[in-house]
Each structure stands twice: as C-alpha cells, then as structure tokens.
Amino acid sequence: MAILDPLELSKILISKPSVTPVDAGALDALEGMLKPLGFACHRLPFTQESAEEVDNLYARLGKEGRHLNFAGHTDVVPPGNESDWQSPPFEPTIRGGVLYGRGACDMKCAVACFVAACAEYIAANGAPKGSISLLITGDEEGPAVNGTIKLVDWLKENNYGGGTPFDLSIVGEPTNPAQLGDMVKIGRRGSISYSLTVEGTQGHSAYPHLADNPVTRMVNILSDMQNHVLDNGMEWFQPSNLQVTNVDVGNKASNVIPARAKATFSVRFNPHHSCASLTKWADEICARHAERYTLTPETGCEAFLTEPGKYSEMVQQAVKEVTGALPALSTTGGTSDARFIKDLCPVVECGGINQTAHKVDENMAVEDIHKLKDIYLKIIEKFFA
Image (cartoon, rainbow, N blue to C red):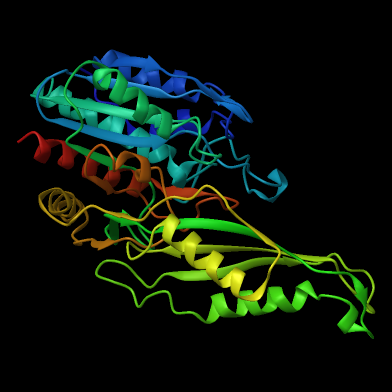
C-alpha cells in the first residue's frame, strides 16, 4: 500500500473551485484517494426546497468493532476579488514554505491530512481492527441544510453505512489561534439570531401625542436586552452575549415619526440557555415595551459539550507528541458541523491554524500540513491500540 503525501493531496483538493454549494470535482478527487485504500464510498446528494442541491460523501473502511470517524467539508467560501490574491485562489502555490489557496486553512488540508494518515496507518498495520469513516459535506459554508444534518439522518437510517455506530468523531476544523498545538475544541456555544419589527403610528414630530413612535419602543427593547446579564459563564464556557447587528427605520424625513422600526440581533450562548428559553426571554422584553411587534427567530443551534475524558485526553496527547505542546481544551469561537454529529457520539475538533480562514491569501504552512498528518496518524494508532 503506497503512502500518500498530504501536501500533494491538499493541492489536488485546493485546485477544485468548490465554492459552496458547487462541488467542482472535489468529492470525485477525494473518492479517488479513498477507494484504493479499501473505503466503500457513498455519494449522497440532498435537496431541500429553497436550497440548492448539495453533494456529500460518506466513506467507510471496515464494518465491525470500534469506529473512528473523521468529519469535514470540501466546500469553501468565495475568494472575493481574485486580483487581491498574490496567486490565483484555486491554483495551489507554495511560497516561503507556505501553501496558498482557498480552502487551505478551512479545511481542505485537514481532509487531505486525514486521508494521508489513513494510508500510512494501513501501509504499516493493514486494515484496522475496527472501522474508520469519513463524513464529508459540501454544505458547511452554506445554509447547512443539505449537508451534515442530513448525513446524520442517513447514517441512522442506513446502519452507519453497514456496521457499528461511531465511537468518536474528529472534526478537522481549524482550531488553533496562533500555532499548531494551541487548542482543540470539545464543544461549541449555541447561536440564534432574531429579526424584530415594532409597529407604531406615523405622525408629525411636533405632535408626538398624535403618533406612536416605534423607534422609542425599539430603543427601550434593545437597551433592556443589551443591559441584561444573561449569565457569568460556566465551566468550559464564557459568558453568553447578545449583539445588536442592525437597526433600520428607513426614514428619509427628520420631522416624521415613522410607522415601524426594524432590528436584528444575535445571541451566542452557553448551556445555561437554549434557543427556546432565549426566545421566551426576548419575547417577554418585547411585550414589556410594545403592543404591536413581530419577533422572528432564525434557525438556531444549541450549545453542547463533550465532557473531558479519555477521548479528549487521547487527542491532546497525540498533539503533544507531535508538536511538544499540550493543547488547551476550549469551546470558543463560532459554531461548526460538530453540532450535528454530537447527537451520534463524542466529538473533538482538531485541525490547523485559523488565522487565515476566509481571508485573501488563505494558507497553511507546509510543515504544519505534515505535522497535522502525523497528529491524525497518532490519533488513529491510539484509538485502535
């Protein structure tokens, strides 16, 4: 069995302009890497009304025993103005020991590293005494309705592709703030956004008693929300926070009280709260200040935590053996597709450095690519030891 170079695999994946939801051959390339290693591959396109079709891949080696999963995505965000890049975003380029290209950091290199780690493990040990799988979506950077969430449903309905369920999932999102070895994630905060419309009665600003100013009501609502301490944090989680993201009246006249005011706000929260409890709290504040309003919650995701234990310690030790640094356990940052997989098994997120994610000249150091492959190899070795 040939050993695969994670750098070359990374280049292949980066060369595919897979801007979500377009696959552009990324999953074909990945399938071509995995089948020679013995993985059974399932291509799973999903559709939903109001969202574009998304192609996904589930690949599994083995049917019995303990089951290690790797989850990730091959879709990327748009490159923006390509003339701002030092080299074309979908032409993987090495400069000064660094690989540049859209998706290098988030997270095509991580996918390539796990495939290369599987190949190296199999070359040295043969097929694992258990199962390894990859759950790869093309909808992580998009609305996330035709990707991992539906893959999870498919797994439940189809016996995990023919065998034992997951014991552990490693999500390859970039988790390190500054250098490899800084951090792995064992949970994520919840997130929910709202749109709020407060209705008033239009009138002349000189005769406010003949009108009902919705701006005043909106200001009072948002002030109450902003000044309320949701919590003081908890073990593994920072305090929850609410941020107002937009206020719009659309009033072009300074002497007219408008008929309505609109706002949007977002809450990032720890397990002290849920989407339902926050919606109830927000509605109570709105009702305190306005009689006519519409509060609309967008699709949210709940906070979750994989309790520190043998799996998080295993990943920490694998990282330390490669980098010399024991990574911190954290739940900081935004959300990820781990929020769907946590319903199946414990989840630990471990990947590259996140400094250039979604930026112009996104990149990953060549040395870090090889080290991340070594980290994944050690995780595989420890899992099946």
